[in-house]
Image (cartoon, rainbow, N blue to C red):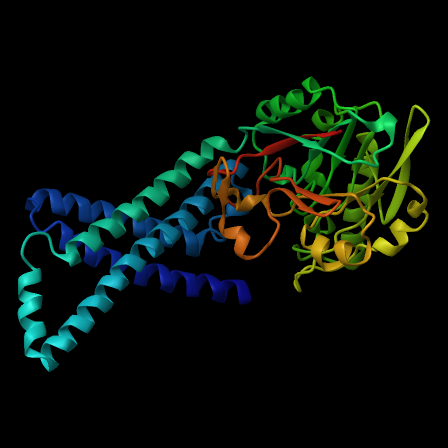
Length: 415
């Protein structure tokens, strides 16, 4: 009932946005021919009504049984249209407020009325903001459509990390870090295989995966288990769990079913040859030198994420090693606990944010809406001798694409 109510709320918002945007379309196309306007208006409402009908009737149409790709694209298109119209409406609202203030002033101050008449010469500010709003919304929607083509466009990020106290045998260590596979979203085995091939071509000494192997269910890995089993490294492949791995976002028929799902997922890690770290640490040895690798279950500082991780338990015994790496899915853990209480953890590796799969990255500049939720959301962060690296994610969830923030394979070289 709750989800049904939410759908109707979203539907009402969509209708209001449709009407608001339509008024702007009518305004800016006044000079068009009647035939051109009619064609535009019919196209607009056909698409809008179709999206609304799909939103309401997707459950009745058996959307759960649709091909995964079709379901994802339909949902993403509906969401994309919503945000595009919302963005356009922001500009329309600014114009409406401006005109409301101008109208009020013209009634109260005679000189303001004369100024308002003069302003209408040439292109009015109303037309400018209307066109600008429509252009901004269309650009956003077009960008989201193009982003569909980037979801398997893997980007290799190479970062050198310098430590004065790194044991000599580990200098030059090549560590590949991946995160957030979300196998339940994949629809193209060959594309995923290309990502795995890129990792293997790097010939890493160590591979670390920081959580969210699936969206919800262990069975999502069945078509891809053989592909990810190819990942091998001399020092091993290690992994931890992310928030999606626990099945917390599914209505299970029983607690036993949920527990079985988690146990099955843990077995998937084992079947692939990955050493899953569950609030524990292991010692990595190379030419007689040793470092500690600590792995904890998901631990997020945000209130809506359960804290399964137990760093005190995982850390116990690791203090004797001069160099320590922590695998913790959620980067908010760094400020909340690691920096405060474990200043000798040299490197923490996380994922979780995906860079929101939407943003801008230029040399010396990066931006994504997710930065308003997470202080550390992509790339390298440093505080004294401590470092945090947040991987942008290998896979995707929700929106089946990437805009500006590409799927990432990280190569960290310890020097």
